[in-house]
Length: 285
Image (tube, rainbow, N blue to C red; front, side):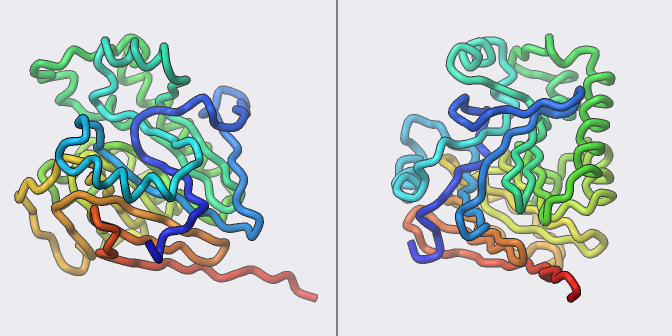
């Protein structure tokens, strides 16, 4: 796969593996992990979401494309499925799980946010799901503290790039559409702190959305298995840069001055590429 590097870190799936390097805790802030960039100062990673159906729905085909490129332990961000009582208990026996945390890679900081507690319907109309909210309640206090910690961490960040990662969409042309609670509570913090990109899953598709009134770019990589829902809510073409209703994944290669995004299908074909650049700062002599 020509556009994907052999030095890849997988992101955006569901929880945090204990194999990551040591945690650095400061004050009552979000837990912080250090992950070094490559020797040349760059970073390469894969973004894969919404997988896990026993190999069905082309999950195995996606895995065959991802596996040769990703030998570094992955990082996960929680989906709403992982708040069920049974799954939460099982995960804590296997993984070291955190709901929200930061990964500092020197040139970029990733701010992982558990977006599930923001969504009203999981509390008001859970349907057949049984959620474990013990660590969340009282919900208003939990969300207030999380937003304050995120805002503080973003303000303190000196990273060249700031990337926020969550499971739920902020903006989406897919079946779930925009997540209104995140638009009202999370997005203003991202915009105020000049976050570059928001990465998510939840909608089972691949998409890149821009904005006419904000510099934040939105990337959905939720094509890990079940897809092809066929219910696309077409947006202004000035905002909807790319949409693919099938399975696949995304790669990101980033340096001090450039971030390259590439979407792939299950055969490794390139579907969409996009590049963002920043000026290199040189000290005066």
